[in-house]
Image (cartoon, rainbow, N blue to C red; front, side):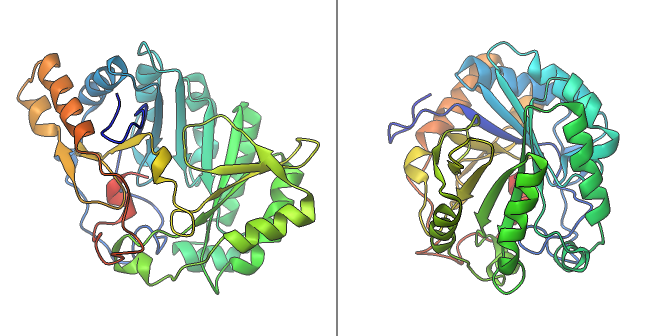
Amino acid sequence: MIDPFGRKIEYLRLSVTDRCDLRCSYCLPKGYSGFEEPQHWLNFDEIERLVRVFAKLGVGRVRLTGGEPLLRKNLPDLAGRISSIPGIHDLSLSTNATRLDRQAESLKAAGIDRINISLDSLVAERIEKLTGRNVLGPILSGIRAARDAGFRLIKINMVIIPGVNDGEIREMVRFCMDHGLILRLIETMPMGDSARSQGFFDLQPVMRDLMEKYALIPAVLPGGGPARYLQTPDGRFSMGFITPISRHFCETCNRLRLGVDGTLYLCLGQEDKIEFRQLLRADASEEMLEAAVLAAIERKPERHEFRESPQKIVRFMSATGG
C-alpha cells in the first residue's frame, strides 16, 4: 500500500482496549470516564478478519496496544491468532508492565517477539505522581519476567516531562545499560488538554549530550516505529529518540492505528478516520473491506500539525491506540 506521498504503509498499531489501570496525565487524565462500551469493542473474530485484510494488502507488522492491552482477557489467544496470519512477520506489544509478570511467558509462546514497556521514572514517589498509583515494584517485576521469558528485544519508553523527570535521564540510561534494555526517550504529544498542560521538553540537546558522553553512533534496530537509534561503539547499549515536535518524522510514516471500536486513525495529529465496526457487523465482503482500507490510505495526510495547531486534537492518546 502506497499513500499519496509515496510512503509504504506496512505497520498497524492495534488497540485491544481503551481502558488502563494507570492514569498517566499525558495519556489518560485523572477522573476520565468516557471509555468505549465493551459491546462496541471489536471481538477477536472481527479483529482477526480485519488484520487478515491488512496483511493481504501489505501490512507485515502489528503492535498490540491500548490503553493497557494486558487488561483485555485472553490476549495471548488473540496474539496467537494474529501471529499465524500469512504475511505477519513481526508481532509486538506495548504495555505498562503492571500485569506482565503473570503473562510474559504465555505472550512469548503466542508469538510476540518484541515488547515495549512504559517506565517514566525509577523513583517510586515520582511514578505514583505520574501514574496515580505506586506501581514501580510491579513494573520492575514485569521487566524481570520479560527478560526471563526471552523476548528478543525489550525497550523502555520514557516520556520526558519538564520539571518532573527530565533530571532523571542519565539514571535511566545507566539502569538500561546495567539490565540489557533499550531505552527510548519520547517527547510529549499535545493530544488533549491534559497532555498539553505537561509542557514540552526538547530532546535534541539531550541527544547531543548523550552522544558526547557515551560516544554514541547511529544504529538500526528491528521495528517499524519512528525512533532514531544510537548505540555505544561496542554495540552493547542502544537508545532511541522519538521527537514528534522538535524533529518530526512524518516523511517516513508507515503506520495506521486501529482503535478498539474499529476506528482507523490515519494520523496521530489529524482527525480524519474510517469506521470499520459497522462494515464488519454488516458482514461486509472481503472486497468491501479491502476497498475501505485502500480508500483510507488515499486520505492519509502528509503530516501532523502539533506545532501549528496544538489545540487541534481533543481525543486522548488512550482512545487513539498507543
